[in-house]
Length: 81
Image (cartoon, rainbow, N blue to C red):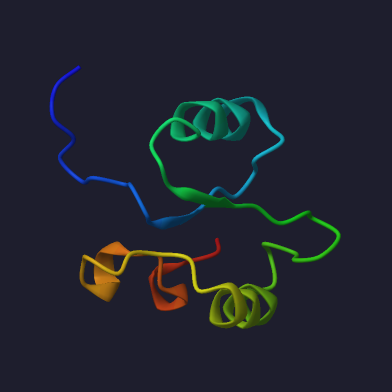
């Protein structure tokens, strides 16, 4: 494998939809990267309700310590259509 563009070791990574086909594949792939995987059940956070998402993100603090907030999963970067 080539060198990672964004090394993930030690990072807290949130995988939304972790029980679906794509999300579960991401979880399996990221499991070997040395990062802390964060998941949340639909019954605990409704992804359609931005207030719930923002509260959960403030509490769990997924994202990166090594990159600016714009690249690390801030709630303000989320949009619901």
